[in-house]
Image (cartoon, rainbow over all chains, first blue to last red; front, top):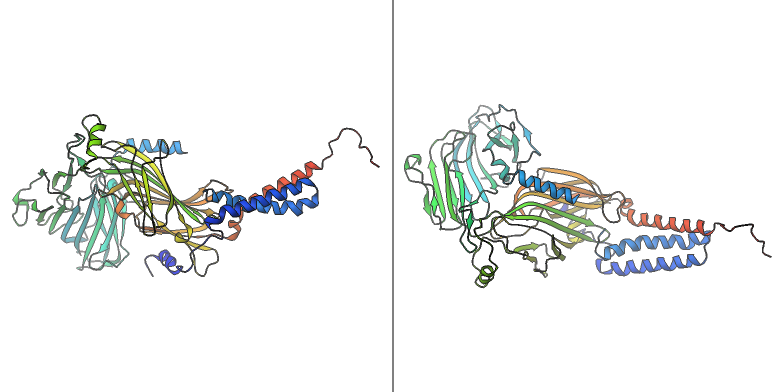
Length: 80
Length: 493
């Protein structure tokens, strides 16, 4: 048995560096676009406040806000 | 929280200005304990390197088992008051350095005991009559004291190093010698020992360049001491870190590893006899003479580091350079004022690194990750830097679990907890490791952390926001459709 088993795991995983799905350079654009989509869909929902529109615009808008907010806060330097 | 931390730091500094006695991670021995005389030191050579502002001691000793049974515990005693300054005790087999498994740990008698011990455990017991060559390494911090304690601003600084010419030993030592490696030949005082003590009838110390040798000495009983001291020129700051807090924050979403180090430095050097003269200081900057003041920190970082910052109590310090290229990333920091003896400076520095250089997916595991970062970085100074206490926090993503770690830096405690910050719901898993009496020579040692990070935990942040915003939509639909009109509804045709 090696004296440093965790270090061996590090060496064995050399071919699998973890890369973020969205690189640091594009986080702002992705975040901004998603937030923009979110605001756009919210406006559409605001035009006609019905239950159908909650699912039609509300769910995609919430998803866009969720991911957009995470990427935007990363883009401004608070890496969450 | 921060206020409490600062207050406790102040108390600790007051209570134990020099020593760093810790009561974490110790084996408690019975108060009547005396190491059993299972061994004999056949030959011992102790090298003390004083090039830096701390002493690096290497004891190479041939030990022999004189008991009838195989033995695997060797005790290394330290005088009271000194064990709290000893750090990074490491033991190797001198003839076979690759052979691992030697464990050195602090043991404690009772609080009033005059002597404390490090217990060294061998990987395999040593058979009777057999010999083993141990190489014991450790660092003594806060061991140099300026003498005179007050000097002029441009004076040379001299420091006093007191020691015992006999190596600390819990066993009979048949032959031994102590060698001092000084940084200079300017040694105004060195205690001279009579010829009668030396086995070869020579007067100690024997000088050869910057090396001073005491010994060889004949058989000495366990615990024998013979005080001696040297006073030599050391016109460099005695950089002493009271505390170093280091945070490493891993972000899978951002693809980033953010590092922040908070330092509390003091210069243990000679204090100024008169007031600080800005004119003399500015004049000396043209010919750059050696000085006991600390005027710059050089911080080599991992290649690829970016977005460095340098902040002290007042705010951003603009006298810094960050040199970053494909080959190096160096942070050059100039404090707001030169730090003379007795002066303090505290600051924080931070930088970002790319996730892919530090984190890898574990082969054959769906959500296992391995992180490798330096245990601490800190400045790299020609005169050396010592840290009384070092607290490294590894802040993993929220929801990470099964955290295991491995490091070559001797630590005194570890704990896993939660750290709550931006966009967190339950808090991020945090591994806190504490080391005491660490020197900058250990700065390249790594810390490897393994953790599991399931996808359910990964999507916690966006899904929390999703749920929150969706709730707002639902509320707005409900509220928007409430009929709050007064009176009967008018029927429209």
